[in-house]
Amino acid sequence: MCATFSDDDVGKPVERADGKVIGTVDAIEGDRARVEPAPDALDSIMARFGWGDSIDPFVLEADAVDAVSDTRIHLAEEFATEETETTAADERSEDRRDNPQNRPDQ
Image 1 (cartoon, rainbow, N blue to C red):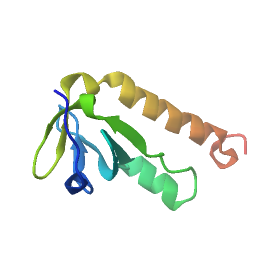
Image 2: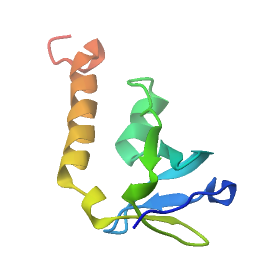
Image 3: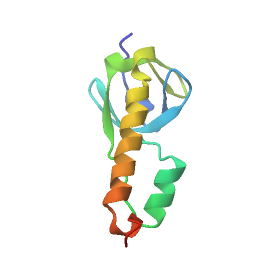
Image 4: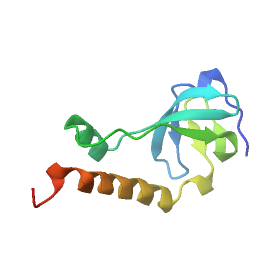
């Protein structure tokens, strides 16, 4: 399904097909929504201690959306992949290794 975004969608949570909220719509740009990723607990802790940058917003194309309800944006089934989660986790892991404070020899 291809959704149509409107200014009313700003502030709505974006939910994968498995129910996990992955972010909140920050802005609408035509047939795209800019999404501010939802921080997980690890991201929040790392940010609090200054151990890493926050995750950058991403652009959500209308064709990745299954439905837009009054309260949320529901993503199509194929958007919820393990690869997306693994990539984000791998990037956070690399960020921690790059931080000299997190190296065991320091």
